[in-house]
Length: 497
Ligand code: ZN
Ligand code: MN
Image (cartoon, rainbow, N blue to C red; front, side):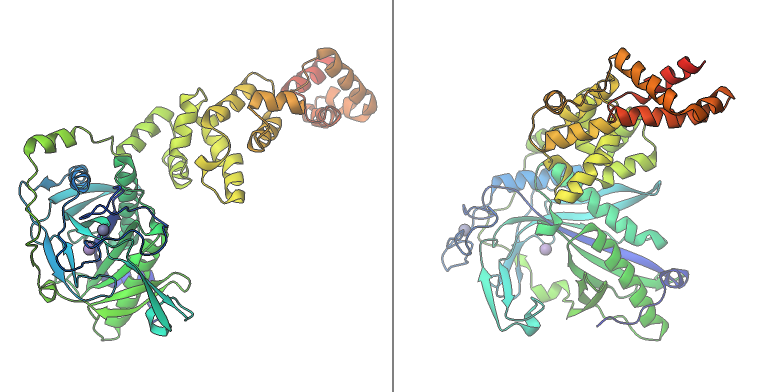
């Protein structure tokens, strides 16, 4: 059931939204956070387990050094301070996917804290302050079966898979984000998108929202315009696509405005996002931190990264994805809109590689965003998964530039490469796609077109040059498209001059 909502513009006229975003990132370490079990995705249920990640009595956790390294690099990339001494903490609560009845997490001593990132939305920059990035372990996975929703409410039984239990997570928590007004949902989406790109460029996570290796809990409250007291917030859990982050917040702002406008109170609670209906429903009342009875984890030694190591890791940071975008936009001379299209299509890497292979930026952009985007869409794959390499796309454009093929024939070349018929040059040869460059053959075709269209000839000679299109069309048709239209036009006009 969806609740009453008010129109977004009306909500924003009366209230200011305040956001808080918690993003969990699953690290791509080979083994788990506190044991040697594999983190590989998709194995038979409960095969990647051991006494530690099953929480059996007497087992002792040991910290994964690679996970600490990734946590520090993430913290540095988010402009955080890195603790020179910090501890893990037990977060106590019962849930069947967590065998120990506590999660090993960090509480008041996170490994990284007090950072910031700048996020651009429509040319406006919003600074998002990072409260902390802390380390913790993931829980197992519950499958609720026998019902229609996959949720526990109408399930007949549930199955547990502990393969994921103990996978290293970094939880990145923002400070409250205010002053974004009607752009709040877009700012949240842009921030999560930034984090996703950042994790990939740091090579610490595959950051796939659809596989839940990056998931966002979106907190939002609203306060009447002109006031400064924070309202009670809701936390929409595990939103699993960028678009859903934006939609869920949009919905929550409208729903909370409806509650407050009708004299009600917003419940401080978690909420579930329903992708299909585009609304949220009530989850559980939100616990306060004290309910978790945090205390320092006695089975693990403190983590005390040396300053030398931290500086070494700082030196390994790649160019930040947002700065890279700005640099490429400058190098390529793309407008904001052109760059945005490229980013939205996920084409930044392939275009960069195509340009590196010798194509002009505009040509690279054209092929990847039109013909190849269409084919990737039809096949339901990413651009990079198409069976054509950026170097081959550059080669296709090279054939166009050399006049060997025109744009229409180039699309057939691409079709041939995708069908596994070989390199662009091989496809041209095999399919006999090269434009006819034999001037005698072209001239004869032009003569035939002129002879067959005396009325058109009269109009051209009267000065109606645009009438030449009919003759060019006739020649192109006869040549089955394998002629250079510009050359045909020149020839037609020369003969009639
Ligand atoms: Zn294990
Ligand atoms: Mn967490």
